[in-house]
Image 1 (spheres, rainbow, N blue to C red):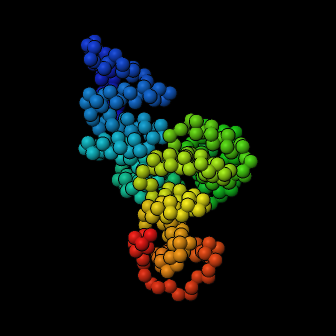
Image 2 (cartoon, rainbow, N blue to C red):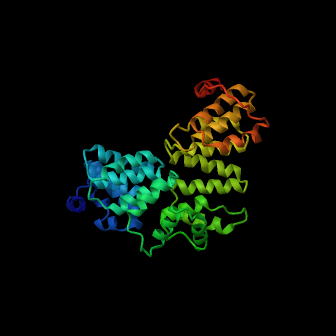
Length: 357
């Protein structure tokens, strides 16, 4: 990677030596801005100018890193893909790709990238930490604990390592109590910050929670996860129009997200906007952890619209595909005010149900 920064330095020298009016050297900032995270806009301007002069996979990688630090994951993904397609097999590139996919909630794609590190000399703690976080997001605590055991955190005094270990062992409440006692999250890792706002359930008058969230949002205004938490909070305090606007912003930040459509679908379902809700539930892919929930709500919506037979067939799909999701079957009657029939037709009519409605 030292060669990359030498390239950047030499580029600055070359630009600054040419005083022609059409030359871009007079507007490119000095090399020092690359070391200063405060000047990210100037860094982007500088890297973009270099890319316009001469595209290279190294420059796309560097700009992807800047976008990543700004939490602009969609832009970071586009650049890192250009860097990798440029023919680079640099593991730094692949690891950044995995990180970006993790933050976009493309967990399976991120895991695919990380298979390349099994026999490499790349920083194993970084890889194992990312694997732990991915498997926690997938609710696979067994694998999360396995990769945690491969990290050097047993005797660590760092708060993040201690709390990560507690999370892996299921001690969620004590972690939330400790995080809730913090006056601010501006100095905390983004993992712990998101974990807190994802899992802590404030009451409607918890202005401290609201203050902390807005404070960290000011620091990371492009973070889709924090924006999602803000939308949830607005919805919980009945600021529905504002919540909807924020949800629609998040949707643009989360392209092809396999999980988020179910959340916004549930938001519309609770507002009794069933057609919009169904449209979002239909976007949830089968390999998503939210697919059982999507099937459940689609079946309820069909029954609400007097399509009882189709609704029960969709529910049958849920029963066949996800036999362990008993909690969804148990609360079905609360929405439909009907007892579930003891027998279902064994047919997966998901496609026909969508087509007919």
